[in-house]
Image (cartoon, rainbow, N blue to C red; front, top):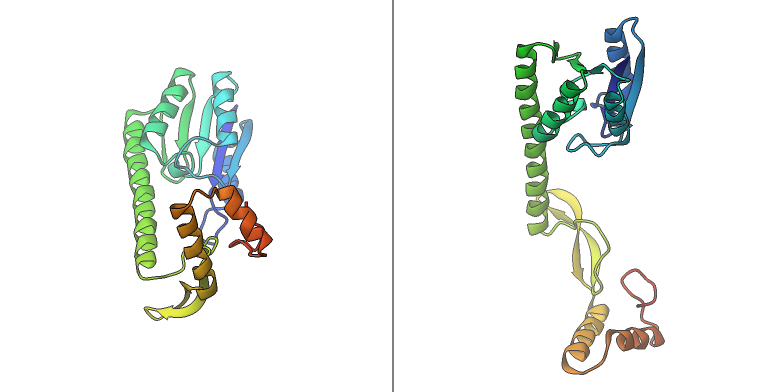
Length: 214
């Protein structure tokens, strides 16, 4: 039996839908019996995917003798993972076909092309990660509000940075006084965090989340 493996990390307009992948792969399977394995909402950075794991177990059990994917990066974007996966395929007699790249693992050239393409897929994934990381630190250094719970002692305020409508954090004067008091009491006396929390609650002072301190 053939395996049709599909994966879609995010449901975006420019992403390849699970349905499109299934149509292409089942067409390639022809009249052969096949089983569909789909991982929606999972990245190709590793193999921690439920449908992928199920497929690999079926290969080891001898149920699957060929795996068909829409594109190579649908099954893996990591060279090491792909090599280990392909070794399992070979060990249990399962071949591998990529519809869009037009090769299969039963030929020497096909195996060479697979390793080249998976290397490029990993390079692309790592490049995207680095760009996101660089953008995040750049925006943070310019004062953009980066999300998450607003720390006690600060308030979010709308502003314009580099011509972009955004938000940044400014000092909340009333909370800032209490914040300084808390640090000084904890640093200069033997009061515990538990007693500080109890004192704040008795004074009716709420935490950053608007609830009691703990």
